[in-house]
Every structure is written in C-alpha cells, then in structure tokens.
Amino acid sequence: GAVVSQHPSWVICKSGTSVKIECRSLDFQATTMFWYRQFPKQSLMLMATSNEGSKATYEQGVEKDKFLINHASLTLSTLTVTSAHPEDSSFYICSAGFQETQYFGPGTRLLVL
Amino acid sequence: ELKVEQNPLFLSMQEGKNYTIYCNYSTTSDRLYWYRQDPGKSLESLFVLLSNGAVKQEGRLMASLDTKARLSTLHITAAVHDLSATYFCAVVISYNTDKLIFGTGTRLQVFP
Figure (cartoon, each protein chain N blue to C red):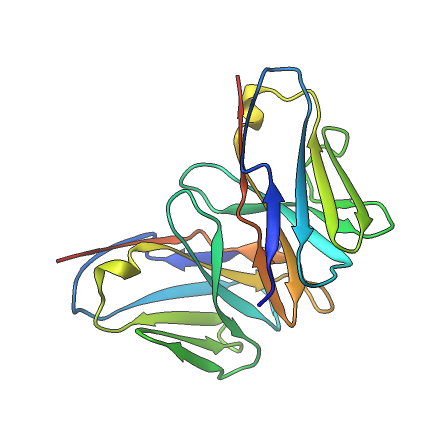
C-alpha cells in the first residue's frame, strides 16, 4: 500500500524559533500534498495544498508567511513554522493521494514553549 | 462553503450492540471517505465511497453513500472494544481536486 512518512514525530522548541516538518511519499509520487492541523479533541483543518514545482495554495485564514511550504520534489513537501509561538502548538498531519485515496502521514506533534 | 457534520459527536455503546454514525454535507461532492483515528495517532483509511448508492463493508463496519441526500452512514455491527476510536468522514471539496473537508468527528467508546 501507499505509505506517507513525516519527520520529526515530536518537536519541542522555544518561542520565536522556526521548525521544519518533512512529509514524504515513500512508494509513490505525489504532485500534490496537503497539510492539516489538528488541535486536541478537534477535527482536522486543512491548512494548505502543496504543489510540486509551484507555490502552495493556502486556505482562508492561514498565514502564508508564517507557514512556509516547499514542494521540491515529487516525494517531498516541507512545512516550516516560522517564529513559532505557543498558539502554534498542535498536531500537524500531511497527506498525499494515491489511487483515489488520501493517505496520511503519522503526524508531527509540535510544542512551543 | 462546504460544511460536513457528523452525529453523534460522542457515542458510548455496549459490546454486541449495533449503531449508526451519520455524516451530512452541504454541497455536491463526488467522493467521501471514512477514517479512523486512535488517540495520539494519525488517520487510518477505512472506506472510499465514489458513487451514489455505494456500499462497502469491512468486518463489523459498513459504510454507505447517498449523494442525493448528501448523506453517508457508518454502521457498526456487534461492537467490540477494539472499535473504540474517533471516526471522521471527509468530503472532497470540488471536482478534479483531492482537497478534503473533514467532519466534526465521532468519538466512539465501546464498553463491556
């Protein structure tokens, strides 16, 4: 089956620092990947669509200068949370589509102190 | 704006009982997904429903889709403790895209 990985799985950082999260499709190519954020006991909220070789598309209310997305290859998308603050603490999940199904990475839990 | 609502939000049920989770969405869509999420984990794909009247079954779970009513159901038969998790439906936001809008989620707890 299709596998999506994320790295790191956990990250703790100080307020004001930047954090990069990687999302990889391991056994298929993905021209499009998606980034979601999930707060405790809530649903997933779509943040942005990552497009290989072009700019990401952000959902309304998501700051593109704060959440930088780079889709450098057909198997890798990165999300950088710039100048992170405690309110950015959340569970970040990426997904990629393969044969009409969206497969999700294991998620990255970010804690900003 | 596409809205996806699930009910109930929380379901506590006894082992061996049957129950149905409902997923309503507000605009037309050509694909609907059901996912399972265990605490602290990511999402596991359960079903992909691609057309009106689609029905899929896996073990004690059965999902159906009625695109005219904009309704999907996830039916649980003879629940067991291992089914305890949060279940999400997700709808493709428009044609020729894979963007998903997730439902509110249903937290299922199965007790002996």
